[in-house]
Amino acid sequence: MMRKEIAELSEKYKKIFEDCSDEIWATPEINFTEHKSHAAALKCMEELGFEISMLPDMDTAFIATAGHGKPVIGILGELDALPGLSQKADCDHLDPVENAAPGHGCGHNLLGCGGMETAYILWKYFQENGIEGTIKYFSCPAEEGGVGKVYMIHRGAFDDVDFCVNWHPSTMFGISHSGKSILLRNYKFHGVASHAAGNPEKGRSALDALEIMNIGIQFIREHMDKETFIHYAITNTGGFAANVVQAYAEGQYVIRCKDNTELKKMDARVQKIAKGAALITETEVEEPEIVSAFSSFVDNTTLADIARENIKECMPIQYTEEELAYLKKFIACGSTPDEEEIVPTKIREDQPTSTDVSDVSWVVPTVMISVPTWAVGTPGHSWNVTAQGKSPVAHKGMNIAAQIMANIVLDVIEKPGTIEKAKEELQANLKGRTYESECFIPKGKKPVPIY
Image (cartoon, rainbow, N blue to C red):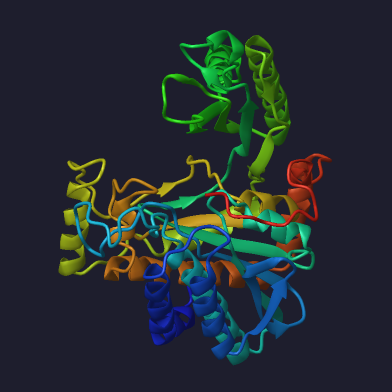
């Protein structure tokens, strides 16, 4: 149920979070290096009266806490940008602020500050209405590949949380019900260098091994589960001289599966292919390094049903004529330039998510929504997203997301038994399984940037 008081609080305080979002947009930083963004967000929450706590070995993560007692409500936020997506604001053609520099091509400036706004207007509502409860805003680093939330889980950040709410900027309204397990490894091959014409018989090509590994992966695609995907990139060819047998080569492989069990099976198969490629070429392959790993998403319909009702009350978003013209401009340069529906009128519930929010969903009942902040047809992880990241349209979507999430929280805590029901559903959906990401990323491992 959308409450008038929440909308009024959002209207009263929204500029604080719009300004913070714009500041973070202007200082884009990649995973685990979000120092300026972290400082801006931390300062904002500290000045608003939240108590700040840090986590071991994580200097770009913090938890901002307000209120007291039970329940303990988790609100998730992210601040990291993506490499190579620098782009001038509001520009409808590629025009980087700085060539090859990072940019907020996934809207995490909005995501993080929308979560901060949610936490603050909730706390004000609690104070004004005498509601007991603890609000925890989690500023999570490195969602883009670095799985910051996994490291936070391992450090006990969510141990006392009763349920979590989260959102993501988007081109549509949506609710996440599923998400694939993902594992990213680096494979490094070592061979023997030689002159490719003078004495090729003495060389053993690491690049040949890497190419044979790729061929092996192509041949198993027919024999994989239909929901499994394997992506790769050759990240180091061992040099640029064609007349040298390359003594080193490296590739990065991403496996996406429907669940953690299938992911382990496919990971084992890919490792066998790598070892086979090394045997064929008489090279050596290192034990493949794990860069990051996401778990599959554990759906919670108890929370999702509440989210759906609150989203419906905000649809469609009411835009000004200037905002509609802005959306049309970016639709024209997006992936669906002939799109006729400028303002989304449906809730998408069939789009799987790929995020470390999924890991949180294994340990705490979690709901994840999406709210329009960009023009329909805007490709994800693109300069188009960066360009729209500080517009009035983006701000409006962020504020609406904050209101929806605040009202979801209030509906959950005001309806007796809802939290317990959500926890029971989580355990039922786990079916006796336990959180498994530590099988891939061991507890105690220190986070490092992956780009």
